Amino acid sequence: KIFSFLKNKKVKNVIDIGAHKGEFLKALNKIESVEKVYSLEPQKKIYKELLKKIDPKKNKAYNLAISNKEGQKKLSINKLRMTSSFSKINKKSKYYRIKKFIMGSQKIFESVKVKKLDTFVKMIKIKNKIDLLKIDTEGHELEVLKSGIKTLSKVKFILIEFRLNDMYLNYSSIKIHNFLKQNKFKLLKKFKFPFITMEDRIYKKV
Image 1 (cartoon, rainbow, N blue to C red):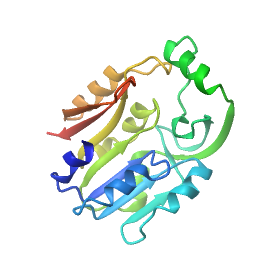
Image 2 (image 1 turned 90 degrees about the horizontal axis):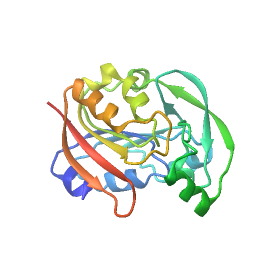
Image 3 (image 1 turned 135 degrees about the vertical axis):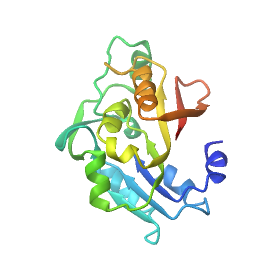
Image 4 (image 1 turned 60 degrees about the vertical axis):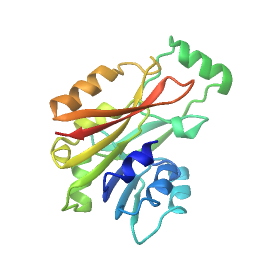
């Protein structure tokens, strides 16, 4: 449903934050209008897998995380690696207890390189509009947005994951929505996941 939506929006330049092994990238490369995708994945092991999915003619990948502070930051590596995060777990969360029961707990940390979104965009020298900014950072989405105030002024669409549970401490989907609204983005569509307390949302600059 997401890609059916994007196919009709003439998306050309994309920044994919939280690219994992390139699942989203693979689908993007099937959209004819897409000309350039900049994919970011902080986990070194997963980044190597991402590189295997890169089409050098239209894709660039970076072993990098985006946050509101720059330097090095400890990333919590979970057993299900696509859920690794900077966010602190709410151990009282019912959702967390169920997840822990099914998958077990794991305390492994990896030091990763971190830049602000504005710094990254300046570094890669994007001159044109950013048609799509995709953010999937396991509860760290607001920090990513706050690091890119200048960048948001030239973004057309934002695809962002919203959590509908209390898995992470200090996470607020309302704060994310209000921040986007304050920066002149309007909610266009919600894509819900069956049986999972998460959804993807697409916002458009107005």
